[in-house]
Length: 237
Image (cartoon, rainbow, N blue to C red; front, side):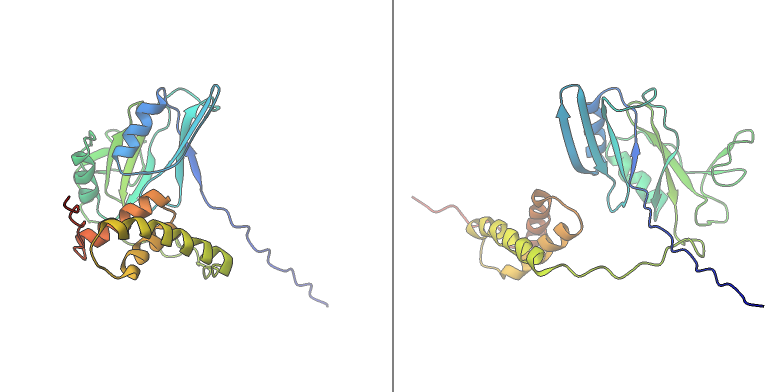
């Protein structure tokens, strides 16, 4: 009997890219998330349409909010999850940014189980397990965020990562040219230094998705805080 082999279909790559929030005041919401240190990706307005996209630090997924989007009642999204390495440290940082945080808690019936009475119990998970300790906060419209402490991923939870494609020569040349132009401004105002020390943090920031202005700030900060290269004194008349 002949056996027919069925080729295994290769999965189509799908990545969670954006969650859409319903808000009542676009400017107020943008200011709130900027205060959290989130990256501004886009702010586009045309007539009655206004959309803003922002991304949490080092996140692969972003949020979109605005005016003219198909949406529900402002503040209707509940329990959007932000993974953190240390829920206590993340909570403390947000408090310093003026955010009204809950206490650290765990769910009495296990993560996200709100089907039982009094599902949230104050304090970290007694067994200190990954995925089990949380804290929460709300944005100005009441959209609720959860911080979930994840220190070790469940086996099989991480997708195999393909090798990143090499940057083509033309793109690399364009990025180096851009870096050189921005470094020229820095070089005119600061003391003697190696150009490659400024190039490295700038290029790293740009390749990780930062805007040129943010990459400049990252490079300047590295030179100032790590290498202690200070601005030159203004010339005397």
